[in-house]
Image: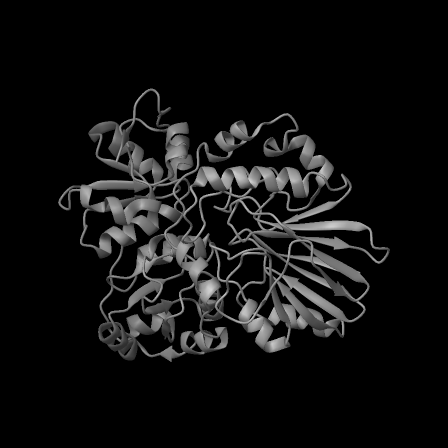
Amino acid sequence: MKIEQIYTGCLAEAAYYIESDGEAAIIDPLRETKPYLDRAAADGAMIKYVFETHFHADFVSGHLDLANASGARIVYGPTAKPAFEAVVARDGQSFQLGRLRIKVLYTPGHTMESSSFLLYDEQDRPHAVFTGDTLFIGDVGRPDLAVKSDLTREDLAGLLYDSLRDKIMVLPDDLIVYPGHGAGSACGKKLARETIDTLGHQKATNYALRADMGKEEFVRSVLDGLVEPPQYFPKNAVMNQSGYRAFEEIKANGLRPLAPKAFAEAADAADALILDTRHEAEFAKTHIPGSIFIGIHGSFAPWVGALITDLQQPILIVAHPDKVEEVVTRLSRVGYDNPLGYLSGGMEAWFAEGMETDSVCSISASAFADIFRSERPPVLDVRKESEFESQHLAGAENFPLDFINRNMGRLDRDALYFVHCAGGYRSMIAVSILQARGFRRLTNVEGGIKAIEAAGLELTAFAEQATDL
């Protein structure tokens, strides 16, 4: 028996490879199929099943492409209604994998079709449970992501309570828990950094599994503090249920090299968004006018999903040559399937052709501190509300990057703004978006709140003073 967790940090997502006697199963695969096909080939195994715990909202699964490439059967739990050929299993139905057995546990609550998969070893003893977004390490799945459901989030939270107590907590304490996500995922609130644990330890430490917790308290606890999910979540869930274009087709389009003039012509002809994925310092120094910065080195895919509202938006890519395929892949993981190509030769070629460039005014935290002490200029803190409440610069306005498209109309286009985040990544994204929308008097503060504090400026807590946009 072989079990491998395939963890993708950008999405805080865990897929799983299980193999026994030449037969393999994949649970919750990402869009690109090659890693799973390569693992099976290395073991001389045939991929027999692709198990899906639910219709994922935070990424586009690779179930269709992987099934087409391997001949595997796609398996969902009860009540799932996929628009393609798949096995919709009964609660308690088992699937043989070599000398192993995988049993479907219907665990609605995160979504109505959510299911977990209980793995029995060669001696037919319970060995591990793959819980998807039903149970995380330290948390449970949020109950407000169901697609086209007439149930309230309170209804779903109640179902989640029942699923955990009736299907998961009754299992042996030494069972290994393999969840669908780790810390950083927006599918829960308090996910631990650990991505594997025993069920017994979770019963002892996970707030949602407390033995004396009643349903009403559970519902309140799970719903308390939930922030609005990213706008792309319901769109990805629909893609996972309805189907999508083949990843290889998407990749071929995105890997099309375009010389500077052809790149500019394509941008005009398709009304394409130019997405610059280099480092923020490079973008600040020089970039194509109107382009948006989201660096590939950060939480790229979630920020793309949060900020680019149309999944069908034509996208042209600016990236270092060795990063282009990664950019296309990570775009497709969250459903952005319309890349038109990339700038061949990068910004060096663009500059060499004499094409127009733009830049961002960016200053050190120490230089900002000098200005702030004498002038007290307007400051936009683009961190999340919870970060701002914890500690911020007195007089700063909280302008969360997550909701910049919704709130930018409340800014004065003629006003001067200094913009910062925690470390510099998010503030450059914010400046790039605002600058592309015609805000020209923007200055990025390098190093963010940490550097600001190190420069000697005093920070305050929300209770003392805050203005929320």
